Length: 242
Ligand code: NAP
View 1: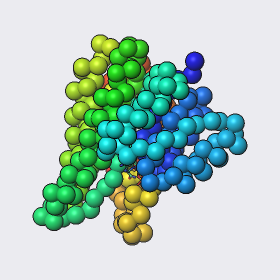
View 2 (view 1 turned 60 degrees about the vertical axis):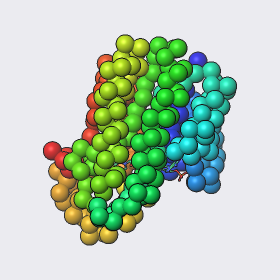
View 3 (view 1 turned 135 degrees about the horizontal axis):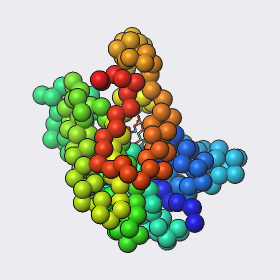
């Protein structure tokens, strides 16, 4: 049977490109969404025109109950989970002194707790299978830190720590765990940057270009195929942070 993948935050941006690329590789994809139901339905319809069928599933990944429902749906329909891509995330631009407890709790829940929780629910099945591939989308800010993005950077560094520790724990069960830490990728998340700021990032980037969601999807395709890479943080950033 084909491989089965859950991609969180799969209806737009980087997640959408990941869903498209995995689905075109004949993988059964459950594309998770929370608020963007219209976009999830459109993605499903567009792929159907290519004779590719994906499942879409609404779940707020900051809530264990909803994650469990998504994992149960996947198991009831396909009987297994081979690939988990923890992609859903939010950013937060604030001066450190202005971050409230509520801001902190919210971003930690959506960006970090979600990875803990979704992974915990999914690996129950991967452990039985003695096979699995988990890919977490962290960020270059988790490696280098981003000014006015302390909480965001902390969650992304947390993801990378979780990736390395879990890779050690799950390696003997043939479950690989890796992070992809993107640099600047052109999605809704970065719409707040002015044209001037984007131009500056481009000029600071050795490859003199801005990343596309497909650049991340290509790395996911490779990680899914590979069987000797685990515990790595792969930063795809055009050389922005060498
Ligand atoms: P985006 O366009 O803003 O998309 C964010 C995605 O996360 C959406 O699909 C959204 O789904 C989902 N999401 C947010 N909160 C959720 C929740 N509570 N439950 C379920 N899904 C939720 O951002 P993006 O650029 O594609 O980012 C994807 C990932 O890459 C994020 O983890 C981000 O931190 C990381 N990243 C991005 C960049 C970049 O430059 N773009 C750089 C480094 C890392 P709904 O719309 O359905 O709510």
